[in-house]
Length: 128
Image 1 (cartoon, rainbow, N blue to C red):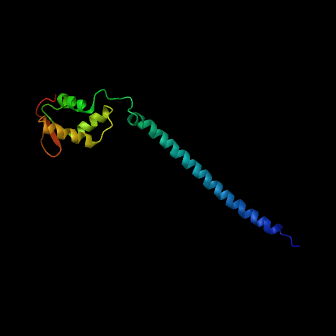
Image 2 (spheres, helix red, strand yellow; image 1 turned 90 degrees about the vertical axis):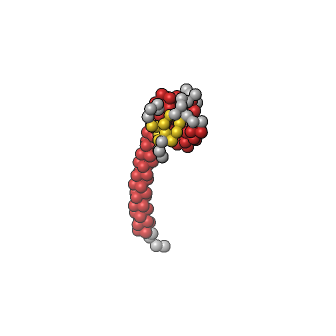
Image 3 (tube, one colour; image 1 turned 135 degrees about the horizontal axis):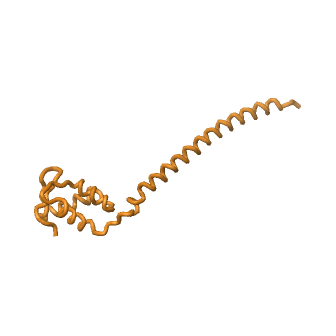
């Protein structure tokens, strides 16, 4: 019978080197996971008011808000859809440009606003 202790020692050394390499990779991966979790937590905190209606919950329907915004802000000056969308978002509405575009089309058809150029509109009649 042959003495295999030398072979086993070599196999043990290779396994320990491999294990140490994997442990180092695992430690780095754990650090990466923790970093991503921290970033996700920061983003959750930053966007929580927007994602859940937040502290700014709209008190008006979107249509009513846009009408009141136009009457209060727009007389005598040009206004853009982006400006209205940003104001609505700041007020707590979860909207896209499409919502504002559709409502602007409705107001145009009703003769409340008219298109001045590609990006801006002006109030023609008071929105009711």
